Length: 363
Image (tube, rainbow, N blue to C red; front, top):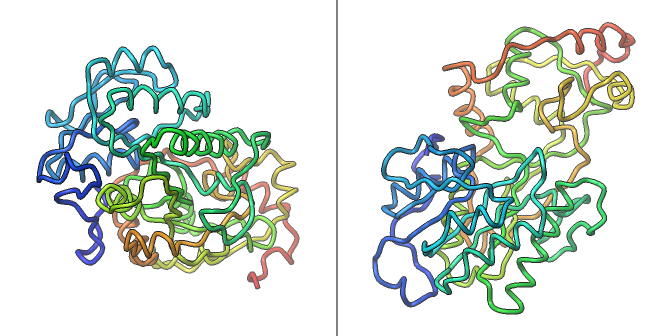
């Protein structure tokens, strides 16, 4: 994949060991990756190809950048008829469902339709659904058996992920549908298309102050994209994962202050902060999703954290050190600008209006 760690943290590839007896022999598996062209999907496809598997990508464009070894299917994953037409006559051993439509949302009904279509042949051995820590809704130190967010949760992304998991596990309980779900938190690493780590590096390199919303103590949890891809491979390599959810993350959450300090350390910079009440930022037009960003793309959210003991025990999950992963990501960042030039006028106005007490170092 594009992101590289040291050999001690390389994702496991090679022959996949599945519970289905048809896969006991060392054969190439037929793998469908739904949404294989962005951050997670690109990295996953690369590793699957390296492992010698027959990989197909399904997305909404007539071509991809993976080369001739990867087949391309053009379809809208939110449209059941489009999916049926694209997948007609095709059989897959493994399906990775990574795609979420951020403009329209991808509902549980649409995920259920996808699951039924790809399992119609009776040959499917794993359906790996990319969920999120957001599926818990809120709260700290979640284990996989904790209740997910309710069907009436006000955030559509939270609601869709939680409801999708419930439907998929209901299918497993009723007819043995071979679902596995993964719940990552904030994803980082080289080739990140979201303006997150780079948001802070742009400002640190420009000698700008970093705005801390509130006291900067909201907790954040991270995972390197390579660690997540390694987990994607592990759940099909490891027996007895069907019917299970896995929290995939670095074990220790960080406060927002600690996260910025880690970004700064990776860049060899010393951060300087200005603390501004979150309510004032939002009243002034700031929003976690932009366009008036103040703390990276979608980074300033109520804390949700989780425990990863299950993944460590069953998948032998061992994430890369956060500092090492950030240094690698920073080297990718400085090689070429992947993000547009920034307009700092919104932040300048907030900083200019801040009282002297806002410039003291965070506790």
